[in-house]
Amino acid sequence: MSDRPQQVVINSPLDMHLHFREGAMAQTVIPLSSYSFAGGVIMPNLVPAVNNLERLTGYLQEIKSIVGDDVFQPYMTVFFKDYSYEELEQFKPHILGIKLYPAGVTTNSEDGVAALDRVETTIKYMEELEIPLLVHGETHGFVLDREKLFLPIFEHLANKFPRLKIIMEHITTAEAVALLDRYENIFATVTLHHLIITLDDLAGGLLRPHLFCKPIAKRPEDREALLKAAIAAHPKLMFGSDSAPHPIDKKEACGCAAGIFTAPIALAALAELFAKHNALDRLQAFVSDNAQKIYDIIPPQKFITLESIPFKVPATYGDVVPMFAEREISWSITKLF
Image 1 (cartoon, rainbow, N blue to C red):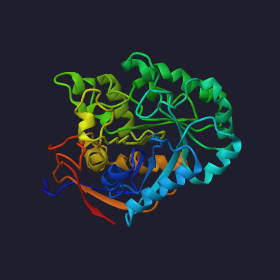
Image 2 (image 1 turned 180 degrees about the horizontal axis):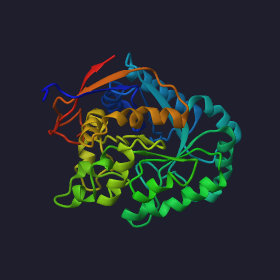
Image 3 (image 1 turned 135 degrees about the vertical axis):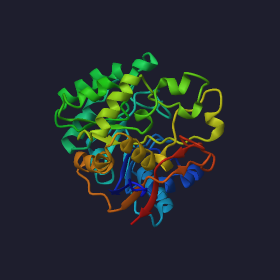
Image 4 (image 1 turned 30 degrees about the vertical axis):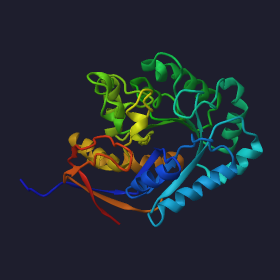
C-alpha cells in the first residue's frame, strides 16, 4: 500500500453562511475565510443591522479592504424588515438574498420579525423580484424543538409563494432534511459542527462553551440525517459554516455568547469527514457546485488542494477560540492556485 497522502482538489469552494463582524474582529476573521474560500454569504445581523443601501455598501467596502488581494467574492445580504418594492429594487444588484430572523432568537436579532403575517407584502415583492429569502428557522419554544416547530412556517411560505427561493439556514434536524424533498422551492445550508457534534458534546459532561451555538446541536439521529444528506451531496443542500466568532471573554462567561468559530478549519475538517465516509468525490458538490446551481452564481475560480497531512489547530486566532482548538485534524490545505 502506498504511503502517499490522499489528495482532493476543490474548485471555488463556497461558504454560504458567514459572520464577518466589523472593526478589529473583522480584521482577524475575514482573512481566514478569504484565504481558503472563493466566496461566502455574509450575514447582516450587526449593530446597527445592515438594512439600508448606505450601510450595505459601506460594509461591503470594509470587507473588500480586508480581503485585499485574496480571490474571494463577498455575497451580501440585508436584514429583513418591511421594505417597499422600490427599496428592494435598489438592493437587488448588490445582494444575493435577504436574511429573516424571528425577533430575539439569536445574536443581534431583537429587531427581527415578530409576526410573519405582517410582512408578507415584502415577501411577495421578493418573489416578484426573484430575491431569495434566507431564514433562521427557529421559534421561541423548547430549545430542542425550536427548529421543528418552525417547519410549518417554511411549508406555509413554500405553498403561498411558490416562485420564492427559500433557504433554510443551518438546519439541524432530520425533519428539516425531509422538507428538501417535499417542496421544489426549499433549499438549505448545513454547518460543519452540526455534521459532527450532538447536544451531548456540548453538555453531556462539563459544559463546553466553545461548542454552544444557535440553533443548538441536536440528537444523534438528527446528526446522522444531516451527515447522510451532506456526504450524498444532496442537490438542495449547501455548505454554510455559520462560523460565528466571539471574543474569549464573551464565550467563557455567564451568558455565554452563541456561536462556533470554524472558518480556519472548515475545509480541512470537511475533507477529513468526507474521507472517513469514502465520499471525497462528493465534496466538490457539497462545498461549491450545489450552491452555484441553487443561487445561479459563478464564483471566481480558485483551486484549493487538500491532503491527508495532519494539521494542529491553534489554541486561538487573535482573541477567538476555534472549534478543535489544540487538536489535530488529519487533513490540511497544502496548495492554492
